Picture 1 (tube, rainbow over the protein chains, first blue to last red):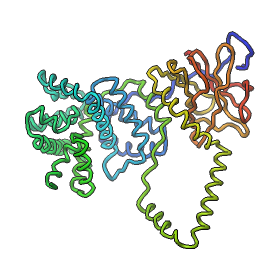
Picture 2: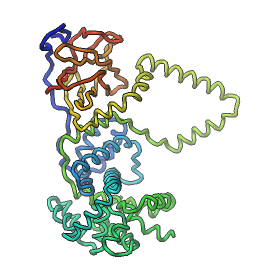
Picture 3: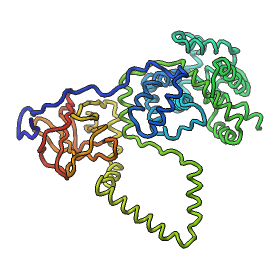
Picture 4: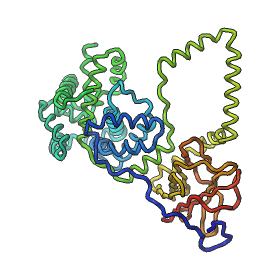
Length: 217
Length: 250
């Protein structure tokens, strides 16, 4: 075999059978399962050293959680993919800066994902999106959408029950801030309450969720 | 003021503060361990809320992420306090007479390292070129029509070529590529119906065998990309059988 053929209408090349590129299996185990925390921290430490296999495994473990959260906030599927890509490239780039003393790997990853998603919706499409949300509020509270979707897994069920345990104002503040990507001022506007009230309800609500979910940090 | 700031942990953890408020609160966090602890706990709580919305991404997303990660430099860790103190201490002796020899030794070492690096790995040229081609590489990888084609080299490692027909360029990405034999180099070829043309030499720098190389010249997507082992400096025509072939028409 040679590829040095002088003229040739066909180039004589043989090669080994092409294999599909390495691709982690579809994520089955979202960050919902706290048991994987130590593993995530070990993986992050390997990713910080440039270990691509560890990066693939990290992706496999948390991609569904990251993509799901980003989609929830950003909504547009193409943009959700872009933001998810930004998040993982950011994790790759900054893995060495992860500080276990400041929280778990899971928290760090999901905080990064949420932050990126919120940045995205707050930039260009902010005004348009706010109009859209006001429109949707007339048809049903965002919380109802969440409640509809969180039925399949035990973790979803626990989160749903924990959200149910909040007062209406706490729940709406948490859902509009976290899943809606809104600032406390926007939430105050939407709910017709002072923004100081939104701040305290966000804190009260998250503290109650923390206790309900038995979160350790 | 302080009492008011303490109530912002929830809004902070849910990213519901404006940029100015967030910056002010982050300054407060540096000085308030109670708030810092509460933020840790509330961020762990919001992480659970986030995970409850899970939904699998489209399978091809991983390929794009991996391709971008491969060309993204990783940040070094923050050097520990002890290390910083040690270096400060060393600088503190800078007024002493013994420092000039130290500096000279350090400079000599640096020159030696740079020379070895430049000679053996071509890293200086590589860094130089990287500046010029990084934009092109990024443009190809991020192109809306970017497509990825994989090959399996004979040994370990993986090679892929990312092609953007719109931009008319292609990027060769390899992983786990063993170093070329002594006095030899890898050379890329773009092969079309009229035969192969040289598309650049491949330098394997570092132990991981990672390579991201913009192919020289235009690519239409109707070619094959091949890699051969050639003598140092490359050849005008391939003189050995390819170790990697990627068919862009597949």
